[in-house]
Length: 93
Image (cartoon, rainbow, N blue to C red; front, top):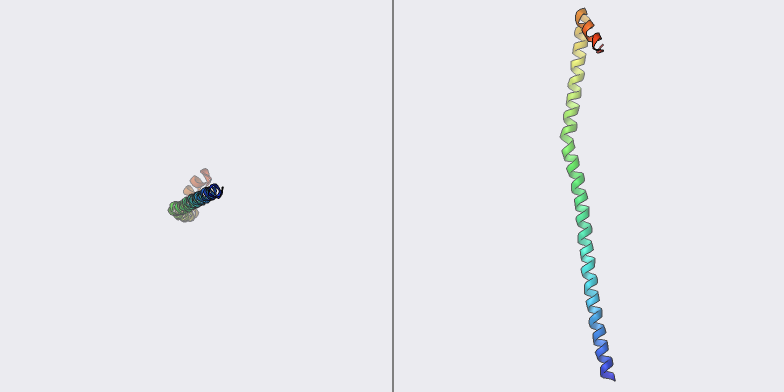
């Protein structure tokens, strides 16, 4: 009778070891999965910022240039009445 109990204990111990191994594998797999997801989110945020930065800078430069051109044209319109009429026609004055 004791030999059957010992055999059952050995089987139970072996089963416990296998379950522990599977738990370790699952925990490691979930860790890899979540860290991969975080890396993907981080890359997306980084890529978006680096892709938008040149476009934002160029837009700001174009806005500044447009503002300067508008100032020049308004100043020229003060001295030239015909040009002022043209600018009024297009709602620029």
